[in-house]
Image 1 (cartoon, rainbow, N blue to C red):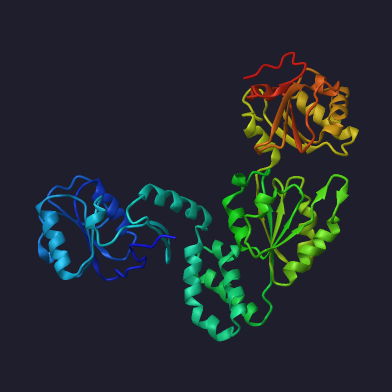
Image 2 (image 1 turned 60 degrees about the vertical axis):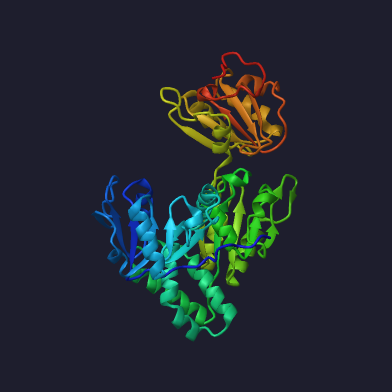
Length: 462
């Protein structure tokens, strides 16, 4: 591992001045950056070209040494006699200097900053790769909650009280973890309300009654880059990850390294846990004060049996929060650019599971498809032909376009296109796996050029 040529630190500027020499775009960028601090920002140049409104005191004149009185930092964002004089005067006074785009003449570098005051994350490449620093900053921005700065401020306000009331270091750590992951505290719009909630949390931990929480998290269709930012953050904060069979290992691995992982998935023909056992498990884990990530494929509220788990958590008085995920039907629509609602074609979109569907449900779906709505049926290969035949029997047109996506949202997805009649007749031989079967006129407007096809009268590829 290479050694650093700079030492990263945070530099106090409160009550001091930051002086910027320059009146163009480079100076404007530094003004925007320094304006995030409590320092007084002064922009000096003989020619002010950029709009510095609200970013500090602007003085259109030459530099004089007195401009550095009370200054903490100097930024030089232009060339010429004023720039040279300012650099010379600053170094004579021991004031650090940054010269824009000339790293060899800099006493310090300005990192890419993730700002959640009072929390600050700085990323520096010592001036070698500023574009890389910005990309890294974007990734860190995505991981940090917008309200984390507010929570950091509350943690600071309660730090002394927490040290007095909670002597055990591990218990105190648990308190801070609960504080920074509390949705109620993050959502508090007034500082007084957030402080009151944080003190209540402190009371619970000081009394040994700190309670756990269950996060019902949608893992999406299986591709790790389709997880929401909130899901990624909570997986990093969970003590235990309770996950289903369909959640890929690469998604589970996005959790904290030391988190316990419990697979409770129900694969076809093999149920490792009953739903009642899963309910009991997550209630017990949260009751032990743990943060539990209940990781479900797709969206937890769409065919995820989340309702039963929520009922169990409510009955036990366990706090829970729901994190939505990309449902397989929406991933399938994205994979094929299929507009499931389309002006003058489809005014609605119905998601349904065909497993165990009775004649009444099939008749209802057939009527909806006939009225122009798009059906997104969650079902596998084993029942697809039978369901298609029953839809036709209930009045759905055999000519209706059908699009099938297996393993939606994943690199190994497979696409098929046909008509409802072809599917009913067994003419579509698609691979086994979690499938979304679209039925409706809007399906023909999707991009199915790479799909296998069978018996397609009236089905035109967009």
